[in-house]
Image (cartoon, rainbow, N blue to C red; front, top):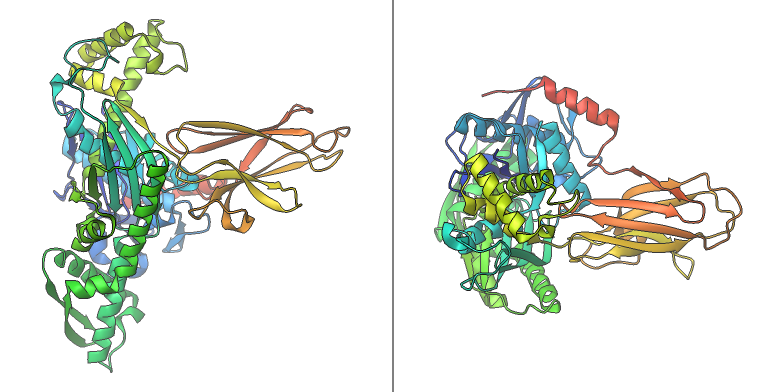
Length: 569
């Protein structure tokens, strides 16, 4: 029954599920470690290695090792080429997902099929579609994609709101108990290996509401590693002027990046460390202090603080001016400079919250919620107590209570778990603005924004436009996504997502004939667009041009390619 939760991370990934008591547990694979490095070695045309083995091989065979692939999700053109074969980001990610699923099978004896996969809150439509495609490639049923900060908040909120089975001992579902937990505003600062997100979330009784999001999915701990590696290379070259710069050699660069990462971890606990750099027959021991690390990476940290400040400002605009708790998530948030900056610059009091595994645990909680919700809804529909398409909120309290009891009895699940699944609601917001290109009054082509960043999900919005000339036989619709932090009127500042057209419009319609455009987006953040020439009665058939969907031929090729490669243990 269990729907597993997967944290598909930039540098490390993890898989979790809820136990018989409803508590989330991370599943360790054959290595015994709870996390798997998100690294793939293409050992031969038909063989690959995932995880720590691939990470170790990065120094010896860097040309065939793929890392940080999450930063490429949704990129149409990118391919990792190994042994003459090109691999898209979803295809590489599918290999990581397959490895996690195999590890889960080793740990439990039963490989999962249904999964919730987490993504950075600032991921756009293309990146989310690419994540779903990766899961499909891996042979999984992707029940949902969930923003990482929401997953972290669920993991935190599980202990805060739902850790005791007695929370809802009696009374109809939907009735608020007298001792219900108060509203708490939480800021989740998530600095992972390759992405950064900051989110303000409101935790109330049985409801988690996202108020504002900010982020940068090209900023993470890997950028700190690069700054350290550059500094180490400079000192090595200064001490060994006759030796080659290790950064000019792919194997030397990989070894240096691994050394930089270790130094970063060590400096989270110590004030100084010594880094051994050996390359081209030369060897140096380079001392590095925490102060030096903080100075060379200060602009990176400043970027996260600026984004955090912007997120707080957006939450304040929505009427929330107090933060009760700051959760530090993501392995890179362990750096002492992070907490120091949040205190000094924003007067916040941060606390580390299971930085490596909170997201996977939260995804497992959400996966259980989705599965139990599905079973309760199916029970109600079978008995005629809930119409098709309606949500559990539309059911009568007594009917919902009865359905929860039947599901708990039928599947041997604690009634408190089923009730929690039915009761807890997750509200979130969209991380980017979305619109269409339209001719403005001045005659310029400009983005017309229908969905705005931090609009609450789900969204369904419709806007009418007019044709630009009489007897117009064809209308092109270009759907764009906001790229910066503000909605720009310049088309070049937006990212084209989808291009489609209404064609075959017969003559006889005046300039300004109505074209109605509808944007719909669910909790998964995936955008659906429809358009309609009202007078002619012609709907728009969109042609997706995103890298996430790829062409049918490309999908078929990659499926075949994935089927021909096997994991080497």
